[in-house]
Image 1: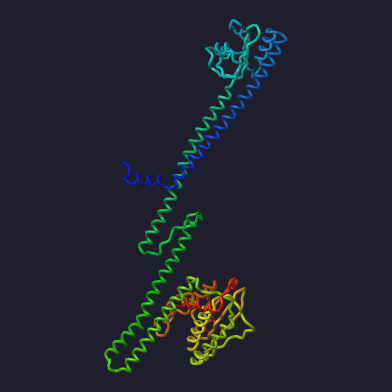
Image 2: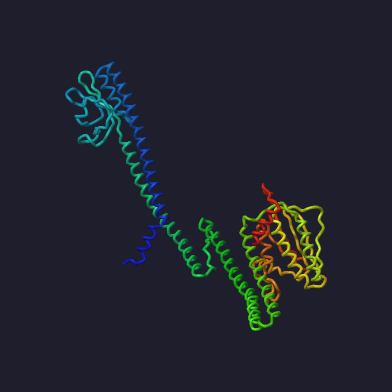
Length: 489
């Protein structure tokens, strides 16, 4: 008794695309092979028939000339001589009484000789060395009426043609049969192989849907379309896994970073409510609470700005901008901050403007973040200094901010650009770990990137902005500021 799962498995094979394609291809090739063989057989048969008809007509003309010259006696002698030659045609001369006068045929149906038609047609006959009635062999022949009541039959045996047709018919059956067998074998092989790969993909999909994002599709190394698909999907799954891990980390960091100021705000409000009679202390508590609220708003503004920048908001205006002027503005803006922290802030001198195509406000914000981070970390060492430089390298503008602080270990440079990532595990310092994330988002929006290098000592952060074509309709400064403000909102 067959297993219960065998029949469903066969039915599943019959429902596969591989079976349907194999059936279609098999039918198409079988019809094509049958048509091709039929076409060859038909045309070959027609060619043989035409050659036989031409040979018979030539024989008849030649025999008619002999009859005209020497009468029936000479015709009989010529036919007798030709009948004895190898590969001779078929000849029969019948008297008015119906007796065979001369020829190399033992028997021919009487109705054939009595027919009034001289058209070429197949007739059965028997050879001289065979006994029995006519019908053993078939020939294509013509029958002609001659003076004196005599009748002449001239033809050619078509046994070779019949043999050829039989060979063609056998070849057709063998070809179609072999094609069916090979088609079925190919279908079984392909179906099983394809089903195996699809079952593997389904198993991996179920594993991923169950929550295990580490599942990957099987890559056999054959470099076929399934392998190429598996490689692409595995890369996508790896990216999704990384994004989910990053989302979890961001969620944990948000919960940690926002819980502290919210708890602090709640504690201050409780204290103010407990001491409602002390107006000055209530005012101080409200001021501190307002400062914490502003910090939370700035955090969410930064998150929104990063999200819109990474999405490439269409409201952002790109125009020709002077990078040297932006650097000069940043130095002027942060000189008081650097001086208060005891940090020497300087920019390498530039000869003339350094133009690029981009959004001035976003690039200014990115450079400001780099300078602010550099000042904070450089202040931890003796004789701290921060340097801003501009240069063009292979068709790209590089804005580099260097400091001589503790720097960032090479192993951590890739992850510090992620949101809420801070190397200060205790999170005792102010900040939320969004500064470098915004810089990376701005660089990506300008089709560039952020590169972190060792300044020996310290860190060298390089904002790389590739050269871009200037927009045809360059927006004015007011419009640019409006769009940037909308992006920051």
